[in-house]
Amino acid sequence: MDIEYAYEQQKELRNRIAMYKGLFLETGGAMRNRLWNFLEHEGHGWLHMRGSCAESGYYVRSFAYRILCLVAACRLIERQALYVDSVVAAASDRRFLEAMKINIAVWTKADLYAGLPYDGGSNRDHFFRDHLADMADALCQDGQMLSLKEFSRRLADDDREFRGVFMFLDGATRGETDRFRFDRLVAAQLVLLATLNRFGYDYQRVPYEQFLSVARECEHPVALANLDALTHELGLEKEEGFKYMLTAMKESTASR
Image 1 (tube, rainbow, N blue to C red):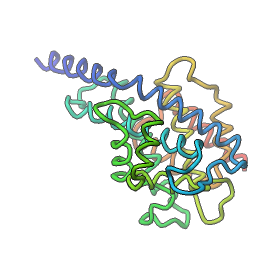
Image 2 (image 1 turned 180 degrees about the horizontal axis):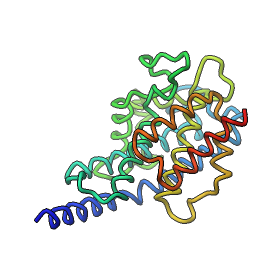
Image 3 (image 1 turned 90 degrees about the vertical axis):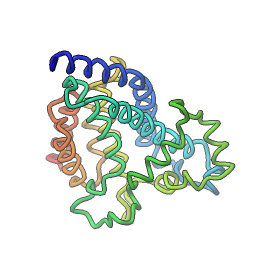
């Protein structure tokens, strides 16, 4: 009976994950591509808002939209796991759930800046988890994501519920003397690369050199050390993709 129970729970969890895994891979791929684009064109100032959230340009609006879509997809998958006994889940499914956790945590963990002069109570360069969850959930209706056009209409009606993500992005750039958010964007890209290399489609996988290129963008090496600690905390350090990420972070730090 125990074997049968475990098998049924594993099957149910896998089916539930499958409902939204494709959504995560698509939103994750879109977010990864936007972060590549940002790192390449950061100096152009495209993330500067010029007016309200609704009046902001396409680049800012679509950036905010991609962050919230990614988090919403992760949360949809996490909620499916609540309906089954994930303790008996197959190892690969457990690791996928942990990957969803780190893709949210990389936006919300103030500890990413441990060792830096950062006030974690201010959420200036990170999101409070519940606040981020509320913004992401507002983008999702009956398991379906609002389109960017629908998101823009919501902003025009009332942008207060989404303002936090715009404030995080507004003016983000390299070399900010009193901000650390650029390193969070780098960390988010590293986590996405690792997740897609491990769980994504073949065409979404990238070579080690691209991990190293992103890791070298980090301005404060302690943030990479803290991301390393988070990865180990969630038990992902032995997973393909995440091993690339950890090695690249160590190499980039050692070469400074």
